Image (tube, rainbow, N blue to C red; front, side, top):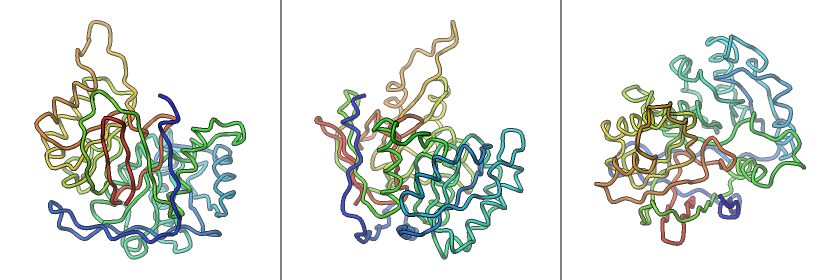
Amino acid sequence: MNRKYFLSSLLTAGAAFPALAASLHDPGPTLRIPPNLKRGDIVGITSPAGYITAEELRPAIQQIESWGLKVRMGNTIGKRDFSFGGTDMERAQDFQQMLDDPAVKAIMCARGGYGSIRIIDRLDFSKFATRPKWIIGFSDITVMHCHINSNYKVATLHSKMCNSFPENWSMAEPLQQETILSIKDALTGVKMKYNALPHEKNRTGITEGTLTGGNLKTIETLAGSKSEIKTAGKILFVEDTGEYLYSIDRMFWNLQRTGKLSQLKALIIGGFRIKPDDPGEAFGRTLYDIVWEKVKHYNYPVCFDFPVGHQKNNYAFKCGVQHRLSVTAGGVELVEL
């Protein structure tokens, strides 16, 4: 894709966020937005999922500190229990400590992988609910986004994590720099704006709604649990990586059969890295076929190839915050309200 069509526009920082009106389909309390970060605030880094070393965090720490913020590394950094960043108990305790510490103003997950679902029920969000802070990450961290958005009505940040920061900032591609800086923008109060190229498979329309979503496979695994995503009256975005087309089809059928597609304001399809069919096992349908089969009877906007997911153009999305999505013949625009 042409990079110039994917940009994070910087609007005036520090403006007050508008209250989020409750959806007609979701009469619960409106989502609260954590306070903007300011110079000197502490960002905690922990690993609720996969293993990572302190050395691997060095580029992220240097960049975050260059924003005028301080970094506190959690006890899970460098710990290892096979593929996990410590045992389930260690990862839960580390995350809990950062949730409860009033000095920690945001929690950035060091990396994804797998493991958040193993600790989510061990966590006590009562203090977090009274003093919300930004929870940052994507992929496996979709567990946190869905659980917090659905149960505590607090906005979270779907974005790249520490393991995506470039080793040498000055030599990094502009696109890589832009996506990392979108995290800073989101945390410091900049209202976000993203654009994408027009796509022949898009369905046009303009709508407003609360943004929600994340990794499709993870969303599927949460179905029927107390962490289940709530999509009615919202703009849903999904992405995934390393899945067969038949698996993606099954996931979209799950969304359809659990009612997650029927009352949307819009559907955003992000990046999908598709695993090639095995020889002699061609599925015979494309990603576009799979999606359209499930949404053809609805009339809300649908767009493809949006800059979110397991890819370089993975920008920071504020889950739980009101946005306007415009899908037109000239392109796609997502704007925070």
